[in-house]
Amino acid sequence: MARKDLDPSSSPRALLGAELRVARERAGFSQAELGEPLFVSGSFIGQLEAGTRRMHIEFARQIDDILGTDGFFARNCGAAAKSKYPDHFAAAAEAEALAKAIREYAPLIIPGLLQTEAYARAVFRAYQPTAAQEAIDELVANRLARAALLSDPTTPLLWVVLDEGVLRRSVGGAAVMAEALRHLTSLAYAHRIVVQVLPFSAGAHASTGGSIKLMAFDDAPPMAYVEGSGTGLLFDDPATVTRHALSYDLLTADALPRRESLALIESVAEDYEHDQHA
Image (cartoon, rainbow, N blue to C red; front, side, top):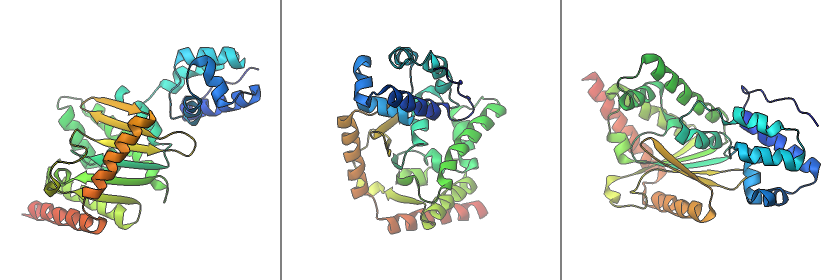
């Protein structure tokens, strides 16, 4: 049965996943039964359908053959693979937009979902000191667009643990930092996010190796994302996700309670405001 090709401007990966679910159910396959000839698990098929996994052309061609979809998935998986984010982060950004809960540990900078425009601009300019202004503007616009998912009053749950160094590292100067930290506290006082600070006094901790982002979904297995400079890895292996989840739980145990965390963030923001006026 012929299908109309997807519109690349309207969440193509989610649309492709929805089409896969319809086609699979129409053909009478369970997720596990479709996964068997592809040599993948039923949960992998579930991730494709939920849009948390990118469909590669090899899978798309096989799915077309198995489900008799007349080349629909092979034609459209290219559109679903397009992203405005860097390759190492694209899959994580798209999964993030579908998550019902995000838990993140940030050791160096404020997480992208919580950055102000001025803070994001300072971060990107530091990464790319010789980039054209238009390129920086596009990066900032894309980062701010990600934060639109916080416009929903309750979903996703966003729980962030910030290393104290994130507060003390002056990104963009005193005025930028004061605004950025006030933005964090306003979201916390509005009950939109949960934020804790891991103080320097905690010493060695469960994630000295770097950042952690954990994502949970309604209809797909959880994922973990770890990132370095220009690199990132997205995991759905249950053992790996469980190990990172334990690290995050240990971080929250070592971090300051929420009320004390907010008091510290406000205190540091006041210091930046004082420096700005001085």
